[in-house]
Image (cartoon, rainbow over all chains, first blue to last red; front, top):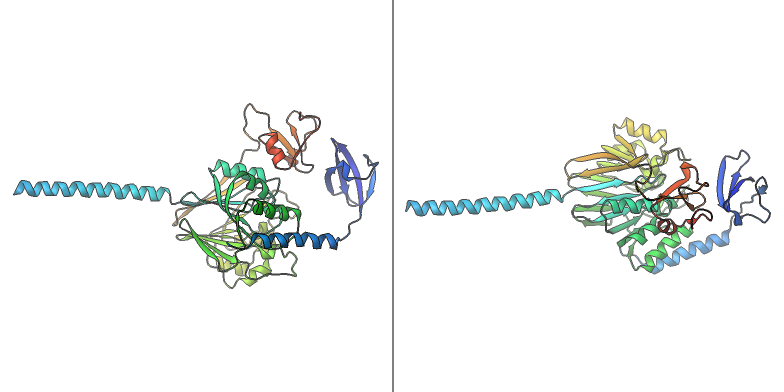
Length: 71
Length: 342
């Protein structure tokens, strides 16, 4: 996916996503790779992380077990 | 003899008068204390519903997004809530439980009702951890569970059974509540979609409907409305939200059914009832906090950075969140702007 660094202000980067740049996302600058600067294009790759999905669900299941069920 | 009769009659009259005064005083007190208030808060795109019970108890059904959390706390405080007796997390989407941490920090909570749906987000984990760490009574009520609280019958109509394989299993495992007070009832449908709707054999007639899923086309259908026959419907959604809520199909169905329709766009929707009749009004919130003489703290809901109002790097109006203090902003997860906040 195409992304473009539109602006950087106070450590916050405004990144425009998609070919039509229809979605603007503001994020901490330190989330971006070194050398990130206004006017730089980014390549964004989204991947499913099944391991993290499993771990996150397991953490919630364990919390439900610990909390019990007494409405 | 006549004098004695007169004295006896006078004494009887005085007793009768005192009884009447006592009865009227008790009646007046009961009448004063017999209002149920359901206030659907304007939390932008999300859900948060405050229920004020006849004897002063409080229930909060969902807490909006993390950004809306401080606003929910402020609203509850302004309504005089000191404690939340029942806190309901209808399902774990962030626009329903994102504000829970701020609420749990601000109020003592009697018990939590949760859908029990395993979503896995950090938002859900942090919420459940906060409940655990505070030793709050916790339950996952299912259809058939009911409780009478301060003269109001609270019934759980869903979840009937776990639902999977839908476009949004989180929505389809929502807690759906019915509140009945005298002849007036409320159906709080959370984000229930058609798959969950089909698992409920029959929805009883309902006076006031909190429309499901922010007025989405999948939250309402004609058969559902025929069963409910609501007089009033309330849609909780934000202005110009990216989902197009409320969808025109849902609005058309409600209009065809002759239901009075309110949305939370621009203000809370407040319904009050004595159990016989009800009133509804829109409580329009001021656009900015009226903190005369104090400098409001302005957060950027995207970057989660907060500024003082004189900062030259303020976010656009649509991205602004107002706080009373830097402390409140930090509590809501915002960090200070490096330039303007000392």
